[in-house]
Length: 398
Ligand SMILES: NC(=O)c1ccc[n+]([C@@H]2O[C@H](COP(=O)([O-])OP(=O)(O)OC[C@H]3O[C@@H](n4cnc5c(N)ncnc54)[C@H](O)[C@@H]3O)[C@@H](O)[C@H]2O)c1
Image (cartoon, rainbow, N blue to C red):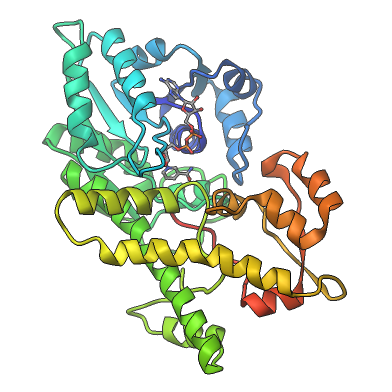
């Protein structure tokens, strides 16, 4: 099937690259001309295992193309995946400007029915706003827009593998035709009937992915609710860490034992410096806002956010009280799968951490490198022990 992807950031490239490799004809568009030049030359401006090889392979086969011309991409296919960024203002409100511009471009350009699939993480009811925008901007009598949602649940670093071997595929649709089209797009994944670039020999045996079909609002909500839950879980582990410290207990032993309960599970139950990155704090804040706006008590979410904010002060208080030096252990604060987590801690910049932990000269040297290529950083073991920091074991699932 012909599919277009609007926006070639992390989400757009993984989506376009994987749809290309499972047999669709994909055109990816981005307004950033330099990014497109890179991609046309087979270079990928983000790190994701297997992505560059896949893009080069599909590019050479002619099944994946890149363009700066969003109008052309909008006209080329009957299904458009919207993958532009939806950042956030300080007060937690989403900034829809990129989505608004993309919707306007699509509405102006097309003269045929289209299925628009929200792939970015967006607040509930964004689909309704998109429908209004398409209706308002459309110039052609034959243009008709159906909006669906198929949010991304991929972990950074293993996003390609997660896309091709997911545990679930979520389709938020309002009509049977949209469901049929999306099912068709995902059929090679549901049937695992593609040539896998991750496992060239044979793919490991796993349960087939579960296909979940909901309405669009539920799909939008599921993505935000999942991320918010992960934030609450991490903050809970950090509250336990404080309690263990007071009581002389060991938080790692406690969380390990608690996580063995299959109703709880160990993931995201790790005490440390809290959660950061671009998405989890943003999604939790947006979710808090939504819950409050709907008149529902957001106390549990607010508390998780407050706990998370306080972790950074605790971290620096402890780090400043400790002698640096002697015992060092390498912990990757910046490996491809984890670096973005540390990008946006509240009042916590990479530079500040690097200065505190490793001395000013090393910090300056590291800061000059490309963020996604930054090497591992040495942190004194004593500091990690005092903070009960463990290296995150699994990449974040967003
Ligand atoms: N990165 C992830 O792992 C991840 C996972 C799940 C959800 N999300 C969400 O998905 C969204 C996108 O994430 P991202 O990391 O890919 O964002 P990004 O900001 O890195 O990339 C967006 C891209 O869209 C392009 N763009 C913007 N407007 C455009 C237009 N009108 N036409 C063509 N291109 C346009 C930009 O130039 C940019 O390259 C965000 O809302 C994010 O929260 C991200």
